[in-house]
Length: 277
Image (cartoon, rainbow, N blue to C red; front, top):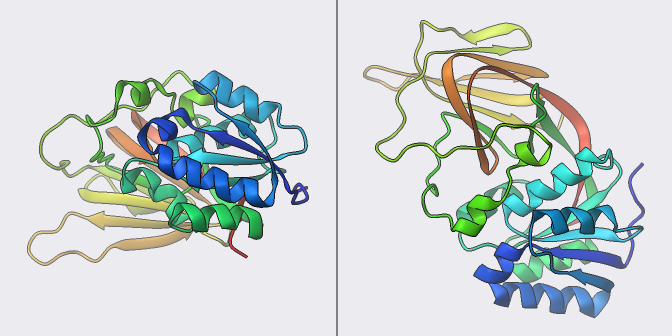
């Protein structure tokens, strides 16, 4: 059962957000503190971040930070079995637009003031997510191959942050793609609810899987074409399995792999995010 909306907030400020955009953090604080009772928490690292959420009591949790901070909060709530019943909120703050893409895709308003007002005036909305067979979660989108334009520009502090996968206690860590040109075509088998969309004999440029709003994921496969561009293959499915030669995948803001097979299953309405009413 979703928590009843409260004017008592626990605001957890990601340390990376404080270092990269302290002015936006200050603006978020001013807006939130003007209209609600706020406990302001400034963790110095992932462990303190997790403990703050675990000890929130009846306060509504609000994360001030980028997509990595949002994913970390979801991981903490999932690990403690509280993801389904917690109305999470986020005020996106980050150094680059690319690090805020997940929050934007989920419907969080652009701009610090608008996002903070949505925390105060919005309502929890149940959203689907993808859960993989290794314990990872995808909120926004899954992409293969795992292109990462921000690789190599992250600070040492950001690289020390655990990924969503490792936050759930998994041994694997996201890895950046090696520098160089674009990814090579992949030979993958993509199955949607057991039906093969593309097999190993057909190279593909890209695979995208996005949680929908109807309990199914939207699947798009872009085959490699010679001459005119081939039309993408599309499907809606509860379960998506990708297999083939070692491949990496980008799940929201993290990169994982290489793996030879992975299955993602839709969890309908598995979590709540506070969005504009």
